[in-house]
Image (tube, rainbow, N blue to C red):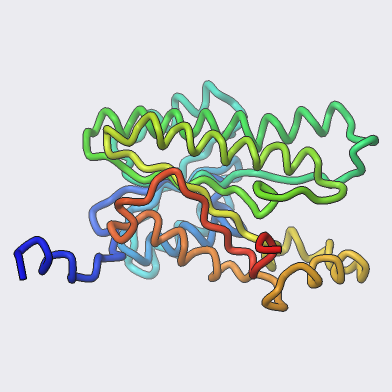
Length: 259
C-alpha cells in the first residue's frame, strides 16, 4: 500500500482548534447553537448580532466552558457597519452566515414592506456579510469555510412562503457562485437547509393544529428538527473533514425534500 493510500485511511478531524469563526445572528436560536458548537470544537467565535445583551450571555456561556468568544454588535442590514465591524476582524477562517427571518403571508397579500424587509435581511445582508468575510479570508491566504443558512424552502415551494422561498433559493445560488469563484483560493462555500426546528421563534406556529399537521405530514421521520440536528452539520462543514466539499447544500429535513 502506498503512502498516499495509507494517508487516505486516516479519519479527518472535526476539531477547529486555532481557527476563528464568525457567526451572524448569534444571540439566539440556531445562531446561538452554532456558536456554542463551534466553540466546543475549539474555534474562537466572533458573535455578531444587534443585541448586545444576548451576545454577552452567549459569550459568557462559551467562556465559562473554557472557550473563547467576542461579542461584535453589528446590524447586518447596515452595509457600512458590516464593512467596519466584520472586515475589521483580524482573522476569519469560518463563517456561519445565519441571520434571517420570515413573515409568512399569502402571495397576493404580500406587502412591499415585508418583501423589502426579507430581501434586505435574508439576501442582501447575507451577501454583504459573506463578502466581508471573504475579503478577510483572502487577505489571510489560508482559505476558509463559508456556511450559509438556507432552508428546505431553498429547494421546494410552500404556501404562504413565496418571499421566504425566493430568498432561500437566492442564498443557494449565491453560495454556488461563491464556491465557483473562490475555490482556487481554497475558500469553500456551502449551504445547510434545515426543516422546521424547535425554537422559541417557531413555537407559536405549531399552536395552529392545521399547520402542525401540514408540517408533520411532510417530515418523513415524524418529528421536528432540534438545534443539535443542525449544529453537527455546521461543525462538519467548518472542519477539515469536509475539505473537498464546496458548492453543496446539505438538507437536514427528515426527508421533506425527497418526495
